[in-house]
Structures are given as structure tokens and as C-alpha cells.
Length: 237
Image (cartoon, rainbow, N blue to C red; front, side, top):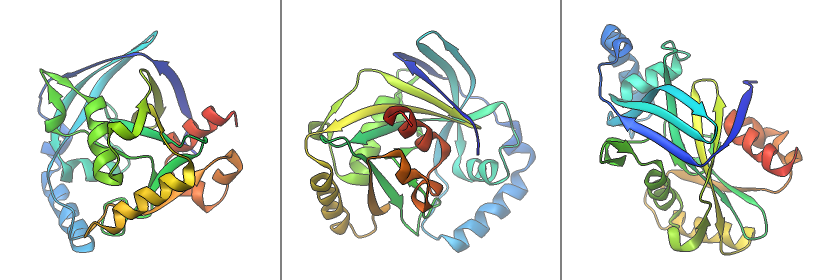
């Protein structure tokens, strides 16, 4: 299992500085073939633009990094091939949603998505639309992903002013705790009702986690390391 480090941060300095990606340029033909195969398996995926990062600096309570844009096909190949460009990382915002009675609320990705079966907090690799005045707005990215995946808006939860920076391999997840205004089972039912109203929801199921022992079976195995590390940190396990 990939070791993870966790730091509490209060400030993000994430600048957008476009540049070529040598990995993507050098392996374009392979990347195109790989993406064509993925589209045959999952016709719903499309080759949009995403933001990736480099040069992370963690000093005291601030994380700094520089972002550039790339096509999703290149990102997917980089991920599937074991992150061959070690200078690049996936730096994304995560809404660490928790119910009023302490349950962590996670979603299971649907079969038509590129991450089918994986279980996460609402999250997503940032997009060019998340750029604000030359900076990458992960706070805004979280609000967008939360509403798209669950139907919840900022009126439905309290937002922690700080962040947890969790680094696991080629991922740096910036988790922002969100506490909903209702208990776990009610919150789960609200999100499930929203999913049922969508023609093609991103999420196939909602899971509640209250204790670290729940991470030791199939549920935890379906979660990326940054998710289990954060929950263990919060629950003292």
C-alpha cells in the first residue's frame, strides 16, 4: 500500500502557468491508441482538458504549485502506465463530506466512468474552467463536483476554512472538510434520491463510514490511499 503523508494547511498558492508536456508530445501515438481502446470499453468518456501540476512546495501551512493544462487522454495514459513522468502530479480538491452525526459520506463510481467501482469523496481533477485570475480555484472545483455528483450545494453543509494536504504517490489531494446539516442515513437518502432523478449519474451507490474497521474489507480496498489515510487520521485509527 502506498504510504501517505498528511499536513494541515491554511493557504493554497496554485498558479496556472501553461507549458508543453514532453511526456504527452513524445508518446502521442501510443496515447491515442490507448484512449481509443478505453473509449471502446467506456464510450461515455471524452477527451476534454484537465489541469495537472508540478513543483509542489509545502512550507509551514502553505502549499504552492504550478499547473498546466493537458488532454484527458494523456492524463489517463500517464495514470494507467504507472505515472512515468515523476515531475508531474495530480493535485485536486476533495469535499470530505461528513454528516451531522459523524459519518463520512462517499460515492461509488458508476460503470460508465473511467474509475468504475472506485469509492471516493466527491472530487475531480481540476479543469481550465477552475482558473480564476491566473490561479487554480480548488475551493470552487469542490463546490462544482459536490453539486454534480450529489446534488448538494453550499447551503447544505458548513465549510471548514482550512485544508488537509494528503500526498500518496503521484496524487496530492487537498481535502476540505464539509459537515452536512443532517444525519448520515438522511443524507444518504437525499443523495440517492438525486441520483435516481439523473439519466446517467456519475455515482452508482453511496456509502457511510463511521469506524476505521469498516475500511479493512472490500469497502476500503475500493478506496484510493488518500481517502483511507484521511479517514484513519480523522477517526484516530
